[in-house]
Length: 83
Image (cartoon, rainbow, N blue to C red):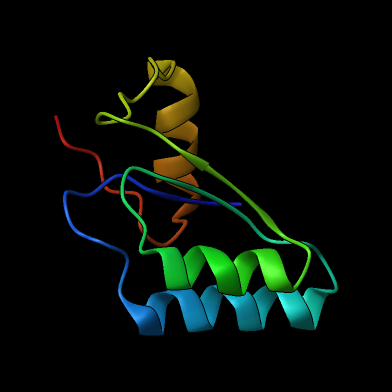
């Protein structure tokens, strides 16, 4: 699953990478997005994947601070503490 919460369409190269990863892992893609071009949806549909389109920005759910801190302490890429 990939979530795109942007005002613009996902870039074609991002979709290419997402679909390549799904194909390598032999899983069906599921794209959750706010805006997606019809041609990108067709590509996902053609390989048996699915999508969910939202009409407004997707709000981040509350995330427990202690769980977030554990992620930060493990040094996982992409997680930075924003105190």
